[in-house]
Image (cartoon, rainbow, N blue to C red; front, side, top):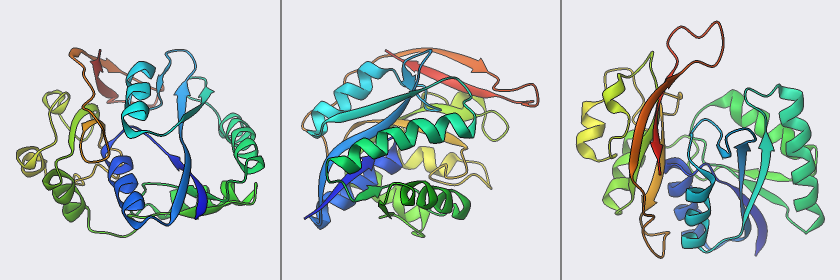
Length: 225
């Protein structure tokens, strides 16, 4: 089998892509790889605590590998830390890097370029699939996810903390991708066929944050504890 790492965000696209990869039985998964905010010890952009990420990995049954980044890192910092981590994986015989991206061409090209620097090939099991079909199959398979962050320019505060079900999908405003592929929302998966047991959590407060002086809308985050 082909030795691979799986780039894990903790969200629904990652979970569904992992489900697909495991079903194909073509890759030997070495670990889940996740970037963390060094200051908060949370998953970058998703805002999920490290402790919940650890519980996901344990329930999935794969080792967890993380690398830390400062808040709003520059491309050079991100690429330096990523290459250091990928070089380590390459030295262990890993040849493939798997992602849950669906249709962002620029992002795919960037991932391919960064992986090529260490001699790895990339795999995109969900590439160019219909996002409405993806999210409906995700729900129908029994996956359960909660919305942890929303782009306030695309969605209102009340979408934060909601469970992703058919009602949620049907309530999304026109122009918002059903999988949030354009960054409209992010999620945390807490149950489904890839887990040996559900991840227990409680919803905490909802906070509003801005990432730059040019950010006029910011993001709403639902803390999971």
